[in-house]
Image 1 (cartoon, helix red, strand yellow):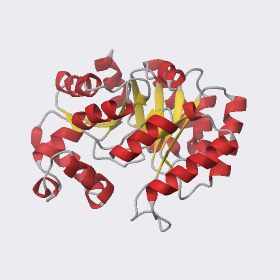
Image 2 (cartoon, rainbow, N blue to C red):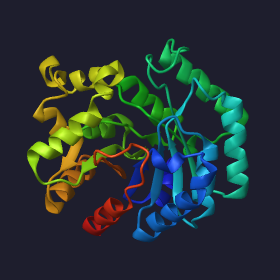
Image 3 (cartoon, helix red, strand yellow):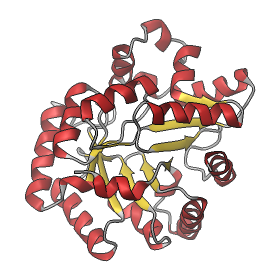
Image 4 (cartoon, rainbow, N blue to C red):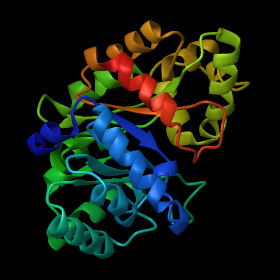
Length: 288
């Protein structure tokens, strides 16, 4: 089902909140950044946060082969008919360039949050009825049930804030064919104290969200690992940091665990919506 996406996203991509800005004054900057990412060899860009198809337009128009996906589009904030219409519009103008990544978000972020699995199934039913092909949509799946849903009703999964061990479990649940494209955070810092401090500052908001903490507990982490900003063990499992060879080795563990594609998010202690273009260049060089 996922062959088309596997063929286009390549091995590595960039996950970014900053690339989904709707500020008209930033559109030229976004287009320039997307064009450079394509030139650097990244196969895909994943628009972080509660993104939407419209956020992909300036990036797709500025490039010729780059796949742009939402990571994620919340099912609570976008009606399936609207999602289908936006998908159809992009597909008509730029065939094969957009991947619809959807997910259930979190109870603390969505007032409508009720029976998330059933709601996601109903959303997929509505996308089917509206003609959105299963092989062009992805699910932000963490647990066993949602991973099976990604296997059966989508092109695969784009799990966020996961470990290489989760990637291996996800690969087993999905089987060989579906696309598995986990996100991995990268801190380009060699000093352990500084690297882990930057990582913990970024991790803090996620440790208040049960969808993530429950997943960590399923993976064998303890409540102690989740306390006080996260243990070294947890931080080191969900962030790649160190010198270039250490970071490359951490990225490789996700590939070896079964990831078809790794979506790399640079974390540097700066604003979350910044465009760390020099860091993206450094990553591209170590991946070459």
